[in-house]
Length: 244
Image 1: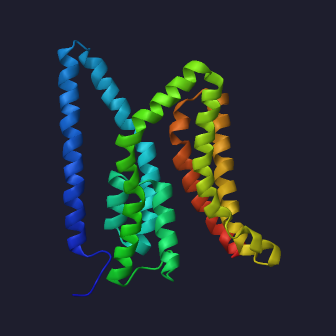
Image 2 (image 1 turned 90 degrees about the vertical axis):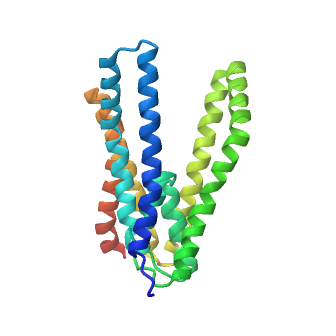
């Protein structure tokens, strides 16, 4: 049987897993709703909360959809659909897939034609992120306790420490953007493309932040990520045509 990244059996397997996750979500939603009624919470307020939460999930979902579409050309639709529907991170999945394809001598955007390459990419994407599932129950309580202790001692330093950890995480992804930047000085202008695309997304995020402040519209913050993400991808086209 010829291998295909969009083989029907992959759709069946992925659909079963996603249906299980959806069933769990519905189960706990119903349980939580019934429990809220038991403790006397207002039914109209509960419905309003559920509706608001459902509406505000649209913004993150747009970002995820963009990631699925971006990865689908190389990995087919089932694998990105599975990864980004359950536990995958958009920034992590694209970098993990891109790095693995690069090591295999394949280009991002070119469909994988061999089962071995497909399995390699799937394993790297899965094993890299599954560590979080293992470490979270083992270490999260101790880390949170340490953060709480630091906050009680000095709230200012606690905020600085939290921001430093966040910036450290972001720095790991910045390395992927600037790893080839030095080659610009030797004449490889195309190495500027990732940095300029990132700058375009950052400018769009800044504009969203300014609009939130000026217009007093908090809802813009929920859509800032998909706007900057889609806008950055759109800007990648003219930037690549210009420098590529």
